[in-house]
Image (cartoon, rainbow, N blue to C red; front, top):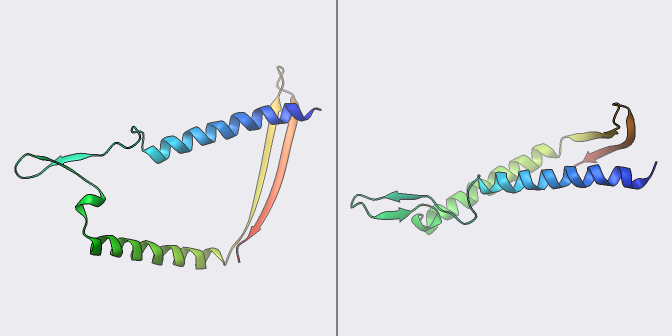
Length: 108
């Protein structure tokens, strides 16, 4: 069984994951697009960091950092085992290629 039989499905799967991830990050919108809202005078205003004060931004960063620290402490208590099996099927449904990977991870 050649290595080429295993590489083609992996390339396809990784490409699909990458495209899905990029779409999820963009929120399904065009890159760089911002929401607009109207203020009391009907003038459009942009939402986002331009509407926040430096103190509000600092509070957001502090809260995010605290949650990340809490998550890291909780993660240190766990060990993970990931078992991935990728099979290539032939025209009759028989397995003609297989890639199996077992990963163990302990966060310290």
